[in-house]
Figure 1 (tube, helix red, strand yellow):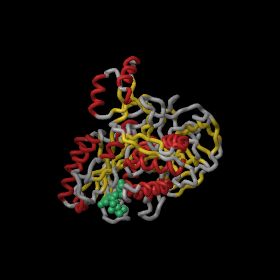
Figure 2 (cartoon, protein in one colour):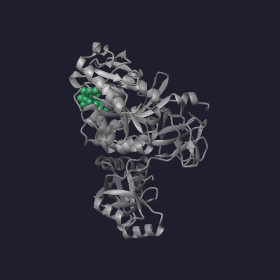
Figure 3 (cartoon, protein in one colour):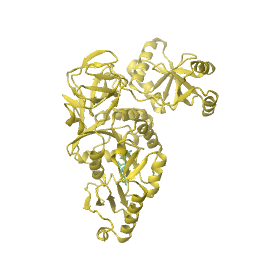
Figure 4 (cartoon, protein in one colour):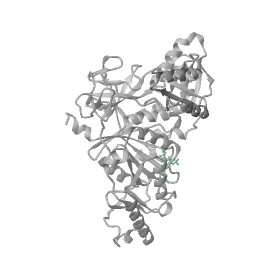
Length: 526
Ligand code: G4P
């Protein structure tokens, strides 16, 4: 027990992730409604970015700016403090989402019943798996026709490579959707297709009782009994420990738009989802209940206003209590710093706070002191491990288009990379700088920001690359030999590590075969 254990244990910090359009925004909004954080539907628009013309990145950035306030949505519900971390909907900003996942203790994945597992969900699940983040699955849009629930569960197990355990089960779907049987609470939740209506709950311990036919049609009752029997036969009993270890994902069915199944999800969530978990630093594991404050920067949000080059550094508190105006150590600078206006995010308002606890996120106004992964402590020399970089999908040479401004360009590139906008590789062969991104929009953002914030002009030149692989070997001679043979394709990342830039899948496969002593990694942490 620490000084702040009771505060810390009531916190639940998580992110909702989904493929665009599965219903993340709608679900977030309903959760906020339950928390009393907002009072009308339609108040959360942060994620509507993707709905505007997707090529209009200026508009996207503007909206991202607005969405600072909704980056973290906090509210109290049934004695718990809930922190929902928002993630960008647009896939070109997937890196932002990956980083946000380093700051959460659990995740809710929303899947559209008609579409099943989609590309983005698969990718985000990879990150959850790497970190063993507990996940709950919410299958949404049950008011529409979709896939057979059993098929869908198989699909999730196969595609997301996680075992599932349904905790609620749908009674039909689409037009005939009658509700769900809540296996966790042994309740029958009947569906009322009304957008602002809270569900009707009936205590129902024995679905074999003929009482069931009083609520739903005989055919539906029969089907439900068969389904439940099958579930109990196929899936083992739900064990919270297997959820917490990231091995089994409990599954709920519902309709976020109709506010159906959402309260059940939330009620189960606060019971089973983890409070802040211990965090691994390079030196040691940090327990959230320790009395001393520690935290790390997981996201930096730049202000797009050129006259006002300030950022907000988002800090996840890993242990203890953060206090306004206290002295904390910026470990990378080995310097004590004080923060006079840290902000917290209550629902949709940003406000200055005096204190915050492990599990919470505070926003620190910043003028370039922070980069992603920086650690703050009460004085200890500690380094939290950041999120690994993933191999980018697109690569371009960045060239200086205004020789008078090369200093500005270099500074701009360095700062934007610290902010995590994209990844920089320097060719070991010719010293040219290569920028790697997830999507085309990021190149446009970089070019614009270099010009408007640093007065520097850049030009992109094509380079044909397939993947960046971080390489290592236990055999120094083999490593040297590989680097010599692939000298044209060797680069250095911003931490100075060796990266092999493969120009095609074929070449990469051949390299893996030809150099058995070399280990190829597709993320920077291994
Ligand atoms: P996202 O954040 O995951 O991208 O999805 P979002 O919540 O914006 O939802 C995408 C669309 O799906 C929205 O419709 C939303 O109303 C709808 N939707 C969400 N949950 C349900 C549900 O349970 N049932 C049904 N039938 N639809 C649902 P839209 O027309 O694209 O947007 P809007 O104009 O309604 O905001």
